[in-house]
Structures are given as structure tokens and as C-alpha cells.
Length: 244
Image 1 (cartoon, one colour):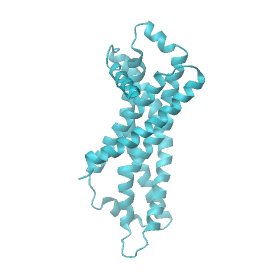
Image 2 (image 1 turned 60 degrees about the vertical axis):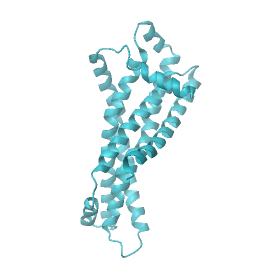
Image 3 (image 1 turned 90 degrees about the vertical axis):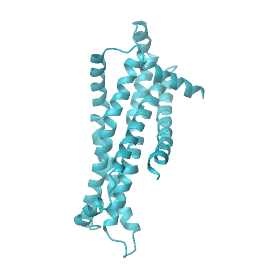
Image 4 (image 1 turned 45 degrees about the vertical axis):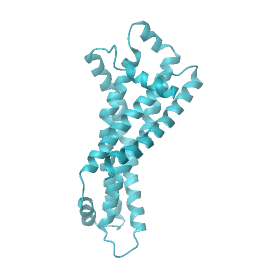
């Protein structure tokens, strides 16, 4: 509970004694490039193979001749949109971006760069962390959209090339009984996961104490705590917003 209380106080310090909008604008653009643009290739690659594997495994388990082929695409669509794109990508996001945030802030703390900002009268938490959180809230939903598209495309290509399902049946299955709220729900989860990962990782890195070894410990703690928070939030959001 002590750590949770410190985390809530940390979030409160982000919105006081803020810098000018122009300063934050430049920092957010820089963070968006680091967080989003440099993660697109990894997200697209992983999502494409996830979609391909999901299609193959779904087809393998549908052994009854009474089940139409287009159901394969429908299952892939639901799994990708509701769970694989927002949640699996969040774990990858925590490992790549969250660890980078924690390591960078931890290094700044042990080299006393954060203390130097405080001496100059700058709210170091707001200056260093708030742009990371805002950039994550902007870029991660976009990465989820890219992941969803690549996963479905991967399933389409593998299904067509391997002869598992025809392109016509796959497209029909994607459109069959589609609930557009699934997209809304996925983006809500993306926003929640982006906030949790960026804020928890920054919190762990910001309060690093010691030397280089402790930076590594903080980075590991940031990733594990972020993943746990994502999984808990995934369950709670599904229970609150999707179960009818």
C-alpha cells in the first residue's frame, strides 16, 4: 500500500508547476517518435505472425464438416480485435517501451540529472514524465490499430496461400455479424494500458536509488508491474464494459 500511495502522489505531481505548452509540444513529438514510430516494425511483425498462427490453429481445431469455413475468419476477428491486438501488444509495449522509460529515468536519477532540474526550479516529474504519458496515450492506440490490421492480414494471407480458407470466405467471415462496439472496447483498453504502462514504468525509474545495478532492478520491476497491471485492468474492463 505504501508503494501505491507513493504512486498516486507521483501522479499528482505531474500536473502542478507545469512548463509552457510549447515546451511540452516539442517533448511530446520527440517521445511520440521514440514510442510509436520506432515500434511500428516490431508490432507489425509480431501481429502478422499472431494472426497467421491464430488462423492455422483455429482451422485445425474446427474438424466438424458442419461448421462453415467462414467461421474461421470470424473467430480470428474476435480474438484479434478483443484480445490479441490490445493485450498481447501491451505486453510487448511494456517490454520495449516501458523498460526504456524506466532505464532512462533511472539513469538520470543516479547521475543526478533529475536533482539538477529540481535545483533549477523545474518540476522534474512533470517535465520528464508527462510527455511520455501523453505520447503513449496518442501512439499506443495507433499501434493497436496497426496490430489489428496486420494480424487480420496475416491470417488472410496464410489462409489463402495454405488453402485453409478461400479469400471470399475469409472476407465474409470478417463481416459476418460484426459488432462495431468491439473496436470501441479495444481502443478503450488501449488507452488504459498505455496510461498504466507509461506511468508505472516512469514511476519505477524516477524513484531509482543506488547505482547501475539498481537501474536494472527498477527496469525489471517496471516491466513486471506493468504487465500485472495490464492483466488486471484487462479483466476489470471486460467485466465492466463488455460483459452484458
